[in-house]
Each structure stands twice: as C-alpha cells, then as structure tokens.
Length: 130
Image 1 (spheres, helix red, strand yellow):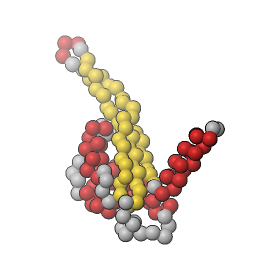
Image 2 (cartoon, helix red, strand yellow):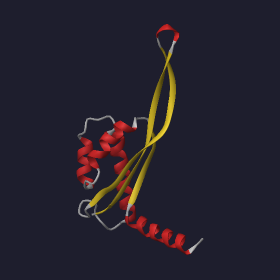
Image 3 (spheres, rainbow, N blue to C red):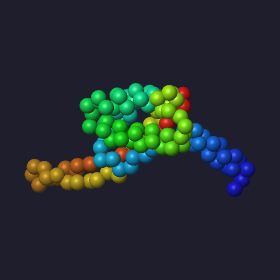
C-alpha cells in the first residue's frame, strides 16, 4: 500500500470512530417514497427525528424509525459514558440507494402484457456530533 492510500485509510478510520451508522438493505419500498421520509429528518437532532418519524403517517416511516433506533444503539455502544439527549447528536447523512427490482408481468387487453416493477432500496444513516 502506498503512502497516500495509507494516510487516506487512517483518516477514514479516525472519522469512523466519532460517528456511527446503520444500514437497511433490500427494504421492499420504492426509493422515491423512502426519500420523502429521509428528507424530513436529514440534519435534525436525533431525538427530534425520532419524534418526527413516530408521528409521520407515511408507510416508510416505520422502517426508518427502526433504522434510526439501531444507529442510536450503535452510537451508544461507541460512546458508553455519554447521554444521547444531551450530546447534540444529529443525523449527519442519510442515503437512499436503489436496490434490486423484481420484474413481474401483468396481463393486459388483446393478449398483451404489462411489466410491473417492484422496487426496493438500501438506506444508510450516519450519526455524528453537532
């Protein structure tokens, strides 16, 4: 490994010590619907984001709330002596990426067929101090 790669790897390793993350893979909801919920909580404090997700009536809010709770748990494991409410932890980054698409066929008039795309997504939440 070259010196530049090693320095970059060490810098990334130091950054990962301070922030924590959680991933949700293959969530059977379309990425477009999940991004609507992700945009609501991006940049918010963790306690406020949990309250927002609890009272959001979107279908994607429930898996997003579970994922945020998992990220909070990961943060508490890294920072054992600190309290989440007083530490000003925010949702630093939240990404919704496209996952696999199941392709199905639905019958249509006059012997034709229409394609149905059942989309899914990957969600990544990264928490960090303000």
